[in-house]
Picture 1: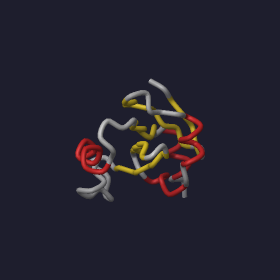
Picture 2: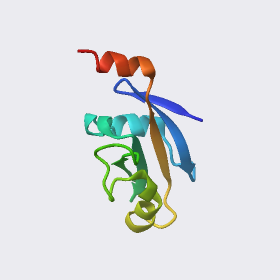
Picture 3: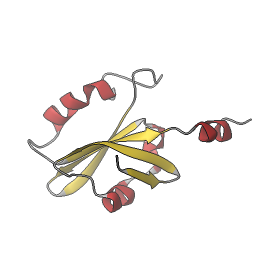
Amino acid sequence: MKKVKVEEIEFEIIKNERDGFNEQEFIDRYTSYFNDFDYVVGDYAYGKLRLKGFYQDNNEKVSEINNIKNVDKYIKENCAFGCKYYIAKKIILWYNFFIVNEV
């Protein structure tokens, strides 16, 4: 699987529909807003990349609209039919957890 690092966070591209993933566009469009999410979905509308964050089921911030289990519904209802899209999953490294959570 393809991996990409942005803002010191590493992602694995777990789905790449219609070869939609473009590393440089993802890096350019990504902002710190997405740092908290477990997944970032990128889709193309009118030739522009759109990003949306999703959480895993066990994340305390998960809701119906941002639950990764509902990503297919999001793609169907909010993205152009047959569009290119991808799903990037945040890779949590054990040493990052201890560094970030050190008090």
